[in-house]
Length: 93
Image 1 (cartoon, rainbow, N blue to C red):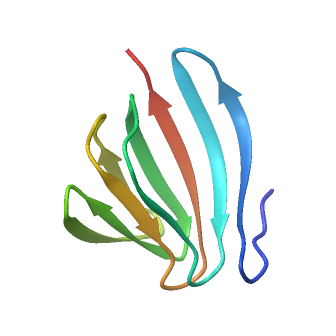
Image 2: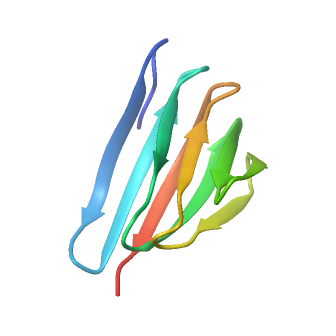
Image 3: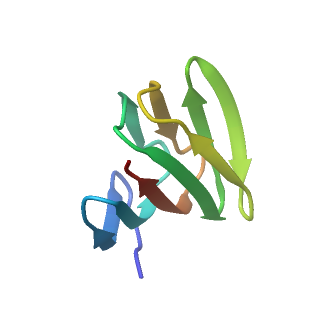
């Protein structure tokens, strides 16, 4: 449903409202989403490849089939050491 070409991060939003947001992402190798915070808890599920995810200064490698929680209001970033796809589910209070 999403395919990133070199130099791209591609996203497709499935649901977005005041309670939840669900988005599918595809990252080309070397692409990133820089450090930022979110008002809701965010669950990242890696579908293909692996991602380097930094949460509050701690770096995690998350592989296909694995998930990680990025808590609300905590600085986080994502980096593609290799191409990867993920589903992002955010929950808002």
